[in-house]
Length: 218
Image (cartoon, rainbow, N blue to C red; front, side, top):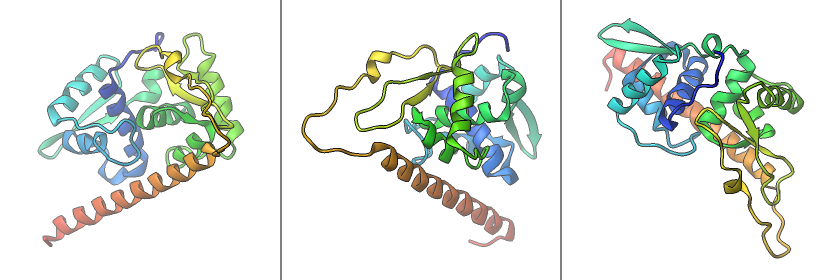
């Protein structure tokens, strides 16, 4: 892909979910439109939280098709969808994993991204995450941008540019008054770990429900 695509927020969410679920629930992949909708509307590991309909998801799929990012297949009685991000975007797996987490969870530090990407592509060190982010940020047409540090944070956050340019002024936050100090990076990492555990639990529940349906159990 020679130019950076510009997605709607829902198109970015749909692509992120497909990239995520390919690794986290391979037995259910490719996804039906209904399952894809549920992934878009998850209450955990998503920022912002969305409430979209299946028809809206299908419309987003059509938008992604224009960029050759969707592969359709017929699975039983329903159409199923997979992503083609690595080939269409001409990016390595590591970069695709980072973009997916940014599309799904919003701005994050390199430390948060390392934790959140663990099931998509495990990064051994934060420095490895930073190297791929720097590569994405310094591309001829940048894919990501580094945001100003939040008060109390030791690290910069990063965000993707797949939905267009970012208003940097919106992320400029004045330092809070008073002597209270919070290590926001450690808190954010703990939240990311809790969100990952919630996601694993949801995947297990989905697998158990599927097995029960196959066995005819209520």
